[in-house]
Image (tube, rainbow, N blue to C red):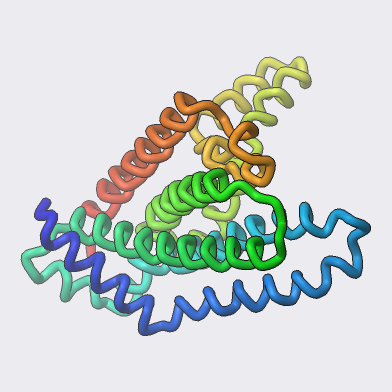
Length: 259
């Protein structure tokens, strides 16, 4: 694998996303926050500050998740459907470089989106005099990027061997299941059924534990509510390892596809 060629592919993906006006989502996010800024006080009784803190991070997570899933599943699938993958393969570019470049390019787009949305979010909090911890929100934003990168790896993995619609469905399913994997183990234990317990334990081992990368509910309460430094570092390693493993699976499948 040539890292220079990977960066070229990643740059092309980033530029294509910009041309497709994906960054307009930043303006859409700012509009949503502005509407919430006006509407929430009408429905909240002295709790609008806490609601706005939760709403801002939650909306950021949902919007960027939709981008990661829908764009991620189409990155490779679009090349296959439009037969442009034949042009790429004909060049001195390996299939692993294509997968890695697509992943890095979309991850960079998501990082820019999260960074811009975080700045807008912090500006609203500052203007509204809402008590908040800037550092805890920044840490939550960094972990959101890690989570989105992992979801991107899932989306690309499904996208290399299934249709776009099925890949989107499966990726959404992995995201939903990944947010309840600890509960699955507890459910298996409560069932008192050895078969169900083995199935839930198997799902826990296979599916990514996305709760380790989701800090938005803790970040609104400040640094003290976040996990300790060792747990944060371990979670970062977990997310990176899982993403690399998924990309290796995607490379393995893609390298054996015939066009």
